Length: 323
Ligand code: 5GP
Ligand code: MN
Image (cartoon, rainbow, N blue to C red; front, side, top):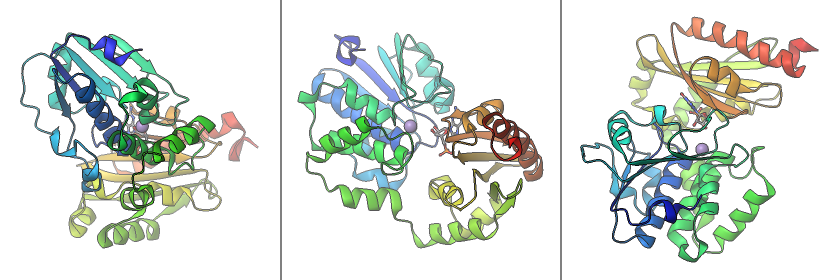
């Protein structure tokens, strides 16, 4: 796919990603935004995303993100990045439906391709890696490199997860040549937590429960506790990784309440469990080792239902009960 060819001669372009945008979603949307502005200065380019975490404010274009989406005029080209169209923020959907051309760029294995044109590469570490490959490198500058780098570090856990390929590392090397302060970026956007975020993390670990002979772990934050600490979904990013890092754990579940009898579920695993299959069963999606979904019911209903599917996946790979 050639992004510039697809946008040739057009005057209005929109970019969006998924709800509750993470580092890859924000980084790839803003990298594409910067690129299109640079290469197609005559076009009007808009980015529609729910308000991302403050730590991403250092990415160029962050202040141009439109979280209201009150526009009604159809766009010539509408990009959906790091997501299936169904997972974009509600107000952007109407505009997406009216767009003359829709383009979907993603790396989720659960995305079977959507839009008039789609570029879905499940082997890619991140959507940001795909944006790097799709843009003309002569347009690259330090701001664009930094946006792409943030996307890659967030989806690879700073080049740690199994989705990191030699190509991902090579792209990382190319990017840091642009001279941005990458150690500071890694600290500030990935590792650093506020005091209250750390307290909530502590509470989640303290209240976690192991099950299935200690091979799985679950922890849940209810609305009341979130209100007590005054935290929202943006404060909870990365918590599930701490559960996954516990010795002996093959599948970690972190849930937080989104409504009465409704939870956002994050799943992390190793080679024993393909969590994209588990999440897909409940209407969600993601990757083999990191996936998510929204579930309805009590906490215990959700865990019981999840365990059945986790067990099924373990049996397929010869994990715990399959041995
Ligand atoms: P997280 O647990 O960090 O929210 O998400 C892990 C991975 O699964 C990410 O790649 C994310 O995009 C994907 N994911 C999380 N929730 C959903 C969901 O409800 N639907 C789909 N399709 N993917 C999800
Ligand atoms: Mn991603």
